Length: 306
Ligand code: NAD
Image (cartoon, rainbow, N blue to C red; front, side, top):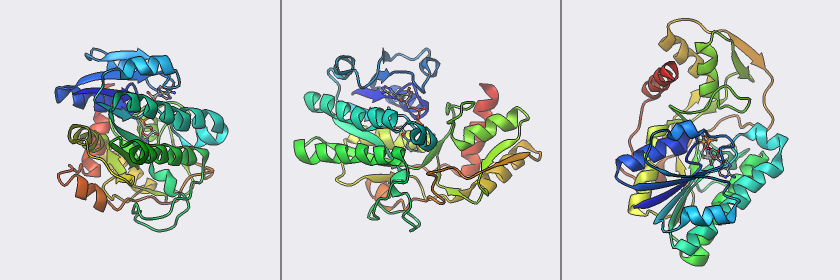
């Protein structure tokens, strides 16, 4: 298949590109390198279009002749969106609309990345897709727009589509060392550089950490089978790991204690997040689950070698 990966120079995108190439697909990437890196794709036989998905001409050229689009391009991070909501809206909401228009012209299958942040302040755990959504940040609102547009294009134009709600994905190639880095690369980077781990809040926040290989397996499988859904599907396996658990696991794997620098809780952050993966298992019965200890060890090994 010929597959367009938007945001393919980013963390999840560059892992997905590797899997698609290994599966024998032809891959086109569009990425403006706003948070991704060209070196994530170095040496790979992909057609790389360095442009924003908001650039209609560049997007149309990248999408020309594709059978499927994995739409991952977005400005991630809750704090980034609190600081600059318009930028998140343009990239995540308007950008999704642009990608869907390109898909409509090509008659291409679309799978896209929404986020568990759309559940926001809904207290129920674990999260099932039947729960209401209550975004707590501009990022979450923009992801609700993403998944809503993807579903709307399914019903309005008969396009086969599948929006996934990613939870906390981690693994090799996740960016560290910038102010909006996710917690696992941020902690690993600090630990390997002998710095204290910056911990926002009391550390009892819990997350459903999902190893990136599980996510790319599901995305590739969805693309190859053109799996569609008229509801968003949680893409996580039901883990429930607190940040204090994460620190303890890192200490165990590194073989020494880690210093922690306590910081205030972040605006817009949810307290607890865990998926109920019933629907995911219905659609993808063979979804591979990587235990947290194993995924963290692979991630640590990658950071040590990078
Ligand atoms: P990432 O920042 O590493 O990747 C996003 C990529 O999109 C980057 O390469 C960036 O340069 C590109 N991009 C941003 N705006 C663009 C634009 N206007 N045009 C073209 N390219 C653009 O992030 P990631 O962790 O790989 O996330 C991939 C997707 O998954 C995003 O949609 C994100 O919102 C979603 N998601 C990720 C997580 C997670 O835990 N990593 C959780 C929930 C949702």
